[in-house]
Length: 196
Image (cartoon, rainbow, N blue to C red):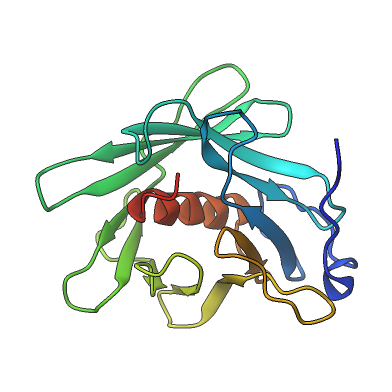
């Protein structure tokens, strides 16, 4: 399979495990499924190889999607909880033995700020992360409870300055952040915007 080559600045970043890291990491997110006629996205690591993927065999914005590693093992199950205009998405971690955790985090659009969404970790009553600009498909930021930006997503730009389409994105995840959590939030934003 052909590899997507990262930008030269991203080449030094390694493909991290699903735990806090000491340095920022850069991913390429292609909002297309690897499955013919499927909906989903593919996440490429700094080495250009497939790191994660989502294949939604149902319709766009399905009620349930699975975030998988490159071998097809489920890592996160995301479900849409619909209550008319009060939609929210809940994510559960999946483990090797098929067991799932209680809801790991929840994402819901906020009505106070235009284009924002609140991410709440299970067991917390207040938002712990905020997605600013969530209604835009290819340019938004994820901030922590203290307001510090922990991840950014933008349209991918080649080394020669060519900006690629809205379905090819660069995700930069800061240090000390769970990369799997951030990637799960990016998938939920894709579901909110009916990109998956």
